[in-house]
Image 1 (tube, rainbow, N blue to C red):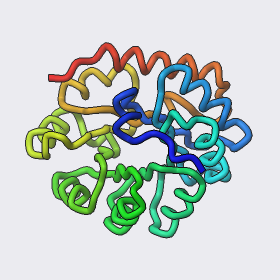
Image 2 (image 1 turned 120 degrees about the horizontal axis):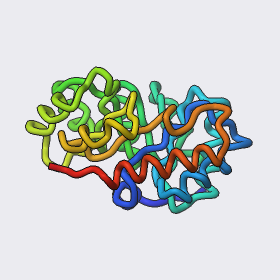
Image 3 (image 1 turned 90 degrees about the vertical axis):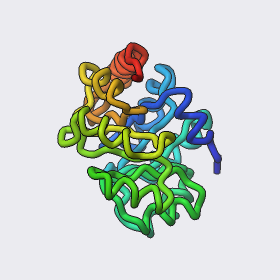
Length: 212
């Protein structure tokens, strides 16, 4: 079982989380290679994908330079299974204090989904590594700016949901520290070549943003 890199190292390399919803174990490494080649270092396989633990295990073995984990983690009992498969990151669409505490206990990165300041502070108190702002379609840049003003300065804010290259700069200027990127980067049936092209586009868009 590989430990992989730390969240801080992976995030510093590229603060974009590749959400591989629907990826199959037989294509996970090929898709992962396309992302790694482009510069991604954070790979998430949602648990509602086909045999997600097998894909997580394959990615973690093949890419020790990346932080690999699971998304759509809704139950406490799933956290240990993800870790046993080699995953070191827990991502969720919601904030479940028990899930966050279990991930923290197992020394895993945890990015719970939040929408409000109340949820954000509660998630941080429970031990969240950073905050997934989800769905971003309901959390415009102005809301990110407002949250940024009241949350601890070191808090990592990652809008997720509807993120495309065209809206990254506005979110970044409002205070976003990174993003989770789903169907605009990968969706079932997409070739590794297409994923690589999309990944390069997102890296270029990120590099073209500025933080105010």
